[in-house]
Image (cartoon, rainbow, N blue to C red; front, top):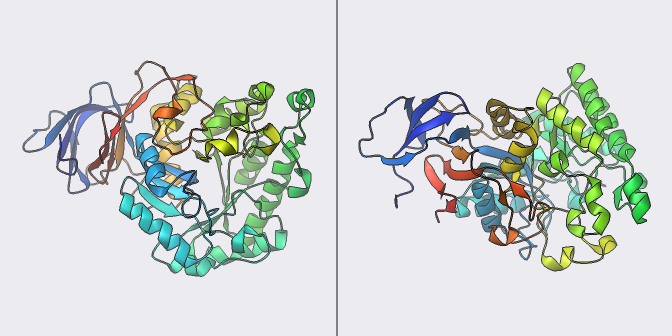
Amino acid sequence: MSDVTGEWLIKGASIVGGEVADIRLAGGMIAAVGPDLPAGAAQVLGAAGLVALPGLVDLHAHLREPGREDAETVETGTRAAALGGYTAVHAMANTEPVADTAGVVEQVWRLGQQAGHVDVRPVGAVTVGLGGKQLAELGAMADSAARVRVFSDDGHCVADPLLMRRALEYVKAFDGVIAQHAQEPRLTEGAQLNEGEVASRLGLAGWPAAAEEAIIARDCLLAAHTGSALHVCHVSTAGSVEIIRWAKSKGWRVTAEVTPHHLLLTDDLAEGYDPVFKVNPPLRAQADVDALRAALADGTIDCVATDHAPHPVEAKEAEWAAAAMGMTGLETALRVVQLAMVETGLLDWPGVADRMSVRPARIGRAAGHGQRIAEGGPASLVLYDPAAPPEAVDPATHASKSRNSPFAGMALPGRVVATFLRGTATVLDGKVTR
């Protein structure tokens, strides 16, 4: 199986957890799906017991290049993504320099093409330098070779309501979407941990849920007023869920994402002051986790997005107040979703495919991704073994350049066996092929 780009016959996979069939890949497409397909000249990959899912799509990852190659590069980040079952990743704009011009987004896009592990979709900044004062070159980024359609100041909130309105109005012309980091800055000055019992006990400045919810409520109203598309990044509170549910009931163009860590972890983990659990927005209480899971299950929250935020060791191994916020997540996301959503009965495998591929591809305007596994479709898919015994996460074995995984030492089920990008095997038997 040395030729990873040739014709493939995947034998006996469970298509999105249902029908067991063979899948033939040829010419970058799915040539046939059915029982007992002839091998011919194709390389045969036995897939008994494996679930075939459309390639995962991440709406929210930090690849750090250009400027912070000590934390991650497009090469290492996309290797990590492929190992996690992803075939497309949206790269956030908070690089150095900021991806606020056509030149920078094209640079990121070309780096993704050169790496070749997954499709890299650059996210353009909403404001110049993420400064929140002046709109960035949204039209130029949209018209660039990168064809940017998602814009976000992630890491910073577009706090000025007039600027947010103008951004929503501007991107409507080319079917763009504004992805908002919902954090009222005045309510979170110096905030360190979810406002509640744990923060009080530890003496850490509280991060109120209202800081997130106030911005989401405001922006839902602005989306309704402009008729434009709003996407809410990393939803973390039960109150945010209710606001988004209300906005959707009105028929407004509002979508939302939740991270794997907010589906599984709570602020109790901060008891030991380990900064690996410091993240923005912060880990919340169990009631919030329960609400997020229910909202992902019923579709109020559209998708899972990793918010993969790699940091070098010195940025995380510091006193809590001085440590950087963020967690890695690309290589563990599907395993976390299996534990939090599938094994709890909240989602089946078609639901996982919808929340981790179909919907994020649609929201991110990622053509060629999030398609059904059917004849004539793109040959971008992942083979996953949900029956693989739980194995402790070891960040030292990850392809990511950084090691700040909050799941380190945690036994997670499942294993990505193979990832195909347009018929090319980027991962085989759990290993990157190039």
